Amino acid sequence: MKLYNLKEHQEQVSFGQAVRQGLGSNQGLFFPAELPYFDNVEALLDMDFNSRSSKILSAFIGEELAAETVGQMVGNAFQFPAPVEKVTDDVFALELFHGPTLAFKDFGGRFMAQSLAAVSDAEGNITILTATSGDTGAAVAHAFYGMENIKVVILYPKGKISPLQEKMFCTLGGNITTVAVNGTFDDCQALVKQAFDDAELRQEVGLNSANSINISRLMAQICYYFEAVAQLPKDKRNELVISVPSGNFGNLTAGLLAKAIGLPVKRFIAATNVNDTVPRYLKTGTWAPEPTVPTISNAMDVSQPNNWPRIEELCRLKGWGLDELGYGAVTDEQTAETLKAMEEADYLCEPHGAIAYRVLTEQLTEGETGLFLCTAHPAKFKEVVDEILGKDIPLPAPLAKHNAMELLSLERDNDFEQLKVVLRATQ
Image (cartoon, rainbow, N blue to C red; front, side):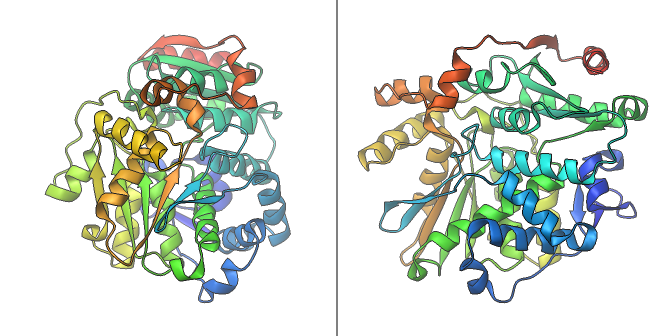
């Protein structure tokens, strides 16, 4: 598998190099030089989740890793289901929160851990540096917890993720260091990019990233789109519209890649909260990020989504117009209204899934089937959901366990020099 740097196309790397590096020079994202294509999608959809996922990922990776090795990686990573639940006659929910940290990031985080283990030369320490707006942190921390020769440093905006999200990954210790940054998620993301631009630091600590900028995470996410379609009744697979709650836009990128390699999807919808850089761009043609606004759907509080260049590149390569993408932005008040309406329809959701559901139902037309992504367990946003719905959602076992543990985070300013001290101290 060859991948090229979107900012400097002459830089081409193998899958292993892309996994180890995370980013290319000049903070460029890696993108596959060739995309596989599956002619007989029905046969693929008839396979079980792990067998199908192994086939898809082997097609991307090529001869660099044996098919048997990829199968073992998938088996180790995907040890939990991604069920589809019927919400109304024509609308279905893809539940991606049945993994160990109760969020969709478990798929990408665990497959990345397997990928890094498979391609590492095992010489010296690797330091995973990542920023999180909520769920990436937990998925990455748990995927790499206790792994030898791998240190993990996770940055998150202090006070801007839910308390239960924070507890899920800031209570582990060991090889996991968590840093509460006095700033926004975009500030955290900028610090990560700064670190990757510092060649000396990058070499010194063996820097790597586990954000959705890492191609292995993105590839893993392609698989659950196929799993969703496989679970739909066959008469509901035509005219399929998928709504994706979008913050850093890795999830939507993976969905569009699934379509590009053969998955039958009529169109996708990018659903955001009021941090609506992409919806405004799709409407006006002007890329104009604004200061990030805190919302009750905090994992989507992103004004400068990292993965957007991959979407533009994929559309360019496939000849797709950006005007083919649906889009919509939802306020906190509308999110709360939608959560109440969903509960009345006997489906308990949380803010991010509710945003995707609302935009989907507003744009779905007669004869179409709608699918929206539920990216986290409602209990991860217990304070918000309880208040809106007047409920007391019980905590699943993993959340209850970590909720009782002490926070171990460091607090630092939005300052690169402070981050360098933290990174060197982990070695």
